View 1 (cartoon, rainbow, N blue to C red):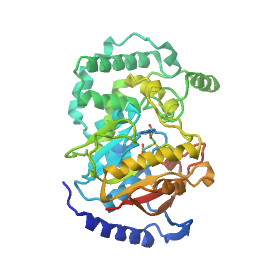
View 2: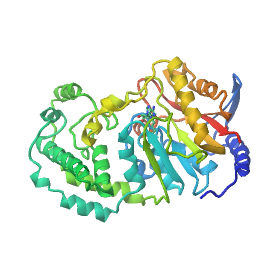
View 3: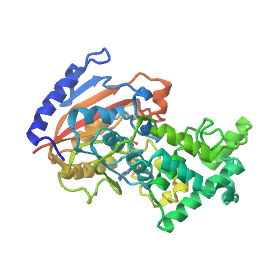
View 4: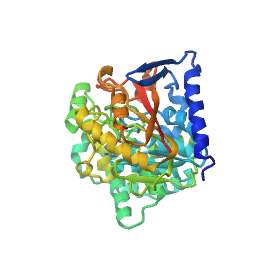
Length: 405
Ligand SMILES: C[S@@+](CC[C@H](N)C(=O)[O-])C[C@H]1O[C@@H](n2cnc3c(N)ncnc32)[C@H](O)[C@@H]1O
């Protein structure tokens, strides 16, 4: 249900821009500057401290943004009952935040991994249901190891449990028995596959959002003289489920999560969306396929069948962005907004935001400005949310568009 009219959205936009100009919450004044005809608003509009995010958002994903980013726009540009969408949802930061704030979450990603990570966090089962299911799983029957190569990551007992769980969950899908509790357990397992600390299934390895290759892992083991210690798969699943659900859960009236190309989302009706908060794949900064190979293995997804868009140059990237924006123009209601985050690539040498603004030409969007959100770097911020990688992404740059109407 929508509680506002398109004309009140136009007023909200005026308020929003004024709010940006006057923003001083963290002590600094917003700097406003016009460059090449685009108005920039620079400030620390939200802080990168992990603790401010809801526990359900604590899923690692390469190139994700922090929940504070969609929260900023959802709170200011939508009302309860409005549809909030992300066509490149990744770990689902935008739809999960929308659901937590009483909005209707819509999301899409070309990788089925995204829906597997997002859907259970939007419609979580209760802890009691999860505990009953964990007790029903025949752990003691899981003794065989098929993928011996994965012993580079896991102790033999851990690997047998993990493989057994994987096969058991996949067989329940085949038998039509798969339900929200299975999907929750599968999602939690995927978030625990690899990582540094005791509460991951693997031995010491790279951070959880970036699985290394088998060879890479063998080298880490040899360099550190390590063999993976035994981990209790069931106890870790229970611990992480409790953690996820410790601050309550969303109860959205409705939700729509798709797996497909952002440029073609036929299931979304025209003018259904009030706000989109999104971040597309940037040039070749992040390789989602190689980062997620182990997660895809666990889910039974062949990453080679997933057509993840990767563009090395602006010349190929911009037409892809234009097609995506044309689709967003179709699904956005008049007066609705798109917050399009492009990060900072190649140490700021390429201003992706200018290419996004250029891609709106001929589309029914007005460019309201570009927000530059600078963060003080802390260890936590590097781990949870700001895409921080070899390409040097170190600030959020958000192009703000409004659908004309
Ligand atoms: C920068 S990430 C988005 C991360 C997300 N904002 C989050 O917080 O997790 C870009 C996402 O785009 C997805 N992707 C790549 N090409 C796509 C396409 N053509 N259509 C839809 N999704 C695509 C990737 O799988 C990846 O999850």
